[in-house]
Amino acid sequence: MKKTKLLLLSFFCLIFPSIIHSQCFVDAGPDQIACPNIAGMISPPVTLNASILGGTPPYTIEWDTLIGVGLPIPLNINSFLSNVNILNPTVTQKAADDNLFRLKVTDSLGNVCYDTMKVSFGSFGIIPNNCVKNIVFGDSTQLGTTIGGRAPLTYAWCPKYNISDSTSSQPLVWPSTSTYYNVIVKDSLGCESYFTNVGCSVNIVPVGINSAIAEDHFDFNVGSKITITPKFPLSKSDYSLRIFDVTGKLLNELPIEGQTTLDKLNKGLLIYAIYEDEQLVFSRKVR
Image 1: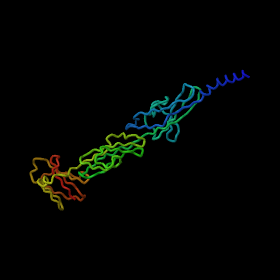
Image 2: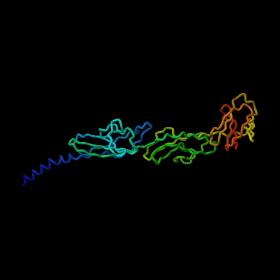
Image 3: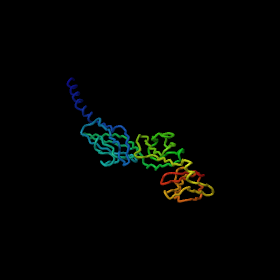
Image 4: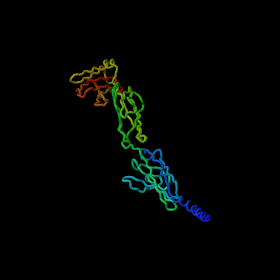
């Protein structure tokens, strides 16, 4: 009987290690977030953190990806991972917004095990609009720029100068001098917009010329037509008249070489500004 127990014990001691080694276990690692840059490359780099938990070495490692309808599609070394045959490859470019990577491990005994992990990619696929605002001193305007991304998006406008809400997508601003408002946009994954110099230029159109200067240098008569008469010779400098709407948009520009008569434009409140060699010397609002 004792001999039988010893034989049984020896038998279990022989087969138990093989039972342990015959089991293959793999962990593909935690889900991760990747932020592509404007060239589509991942920055900062993202490395898959997989590990083998059981099996008999050596191992054969194969990564593939589950995209589209969820079918495995073989990768090559130049696709989405730096190397599909190592345990911890680096993600090199975006596959899909939410992409499953599957890890297959085969040990030396032919046992096969699988695990998957997900990489979520940030996305800013819309080129921002060129945002330029022209306003009269004392007025306000609304900022706004179009950037695609995974909602909800967060905004951080800078500088926080004469602005209603620096975290709004379209805040109101009323700067006293021409100001460029830059915005940093982040998506729901925490990826930051890779577009540089995203923001709005707010230009102040100068219209507050000293009234004494205006009266001493020009007669500005408004009737069915507008007549501008200089009170001094204009031969020494180049003078021009520029007409702006209330948004600061330039509607017309023409030289002033003497008395000038214009048709009155029926476009609401307009600003008539006279420049001497690019220096504002006279302005008048006309409705």
